[in-house]
Amino acid sequence: MKKKATGHSHAKVIFLGEHSAVYHQPAIVFPVPQANVTATLQASNQGVTTIHSQYYSGPIADLPASMAGITALIQKLHQELNRQHQPMNLEINSTIPLGRGMGSSAAIASAIIRGYFAFFETPLSRATLTEYTDIEEKITHGNPSGIDAQTVNVSHPILYEQQQFIDFTPQLSGFLVIADTGLAGNTKTAVNQVREFLEADPVRQELITRLGHLTEVVKTSLTNQDLVKTGQVLTEAQAILTALGVSTTQIEQLVAVANQAGALGAKLTGSGLGGCIIALAPDYPSAKRIAAALTDYGAAQTWIQSLTELNPEENNKDE
Ligand code: MEV
Image (cartoon, rainbow, N blue to C red; front, top):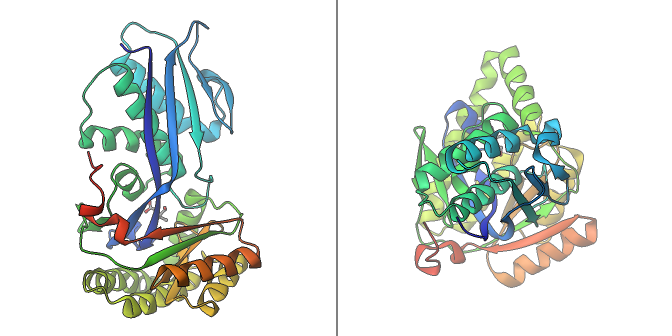
């Protein structure tokens, strides 16, 4: 057992395939290393395990219901690793905004898991890390596709196809601009809303099939570094997500601003009903222009992610 240990994780954005992934259609998800979480663990002499974060500080037994997934995860970690019932002190520092479709809950879970395994000096495989992250995700999001849990644990993109998670490592180019509407969405609510919408008229299932097809098109266009085609597909996907009822006025406005500022295409990312948009830019100067236009318009925060940085030889941090 160590005196102190840390675990790290990072945000994710769904490039394409949100909502359709719930119906086992393909999806492509990118890590966003610059928005991240650190969990610092120390043995506590307080008698109970406590957690300190910008959202909650106090004993884990009193964590709010919205954090029930984290409570269940910590209980499981204590059962499996903390046989001597050592009370712990967890400090969580996150730069990932909550409820914005950037995988904040999965990333917090991942950082906590890594911290616990490091503290108790136990080897942690990628499969175990994902299995434990899923414990939190299932409680927090209901019945998620699992793509968040996969992507917060690796530093390269993930392709979800035929219900398998595949490391997606073509040579990528271009830049992704991510902009936060400043409004939180709720994945469970959005997923349930889409389900009700689809059940009301079976013909609507075509929208899901079309999103799945678009993901396959983008898989090829990204692999071929065809950014223009990729951008066009993102724009079509946004129209379908609007038809599914998960876009909002704020999302539509940010998408329009990004496109006017020179994006090759833009769409919401994550469950929608708030949260973030992504816009594709061909180069860094364009990405900066788009980000500046979004900030001027009122985006709460923007990030510029180089897709080249996600190429396998550009990072060697994978587990
Ligand atoms: C949420 O980040 C993405 C959704 O497709 C839900 C899921 O895949 O679990 C809306």
